[in-house]
Image (cartoon, rainbow, N blue to C red):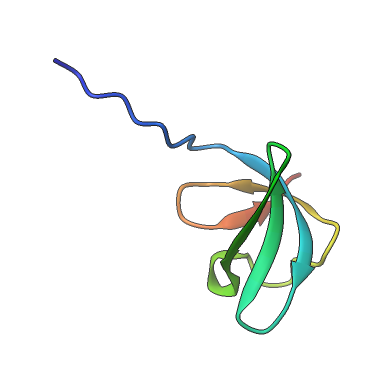
Length: 60
């Protein structure tokens, strides 16, 4: 039997806030705090991002 994962590999979001150690993203209408180390360097608040399986990167 195959197990299904609830993790979406390409999950889109928007960076709402960034501080030294964490960031707040809006993902599917919910605010989620994530470690700043998981946000691609150079990403600013207001940037649409996408989870690539390792970190949040700006959408192109």
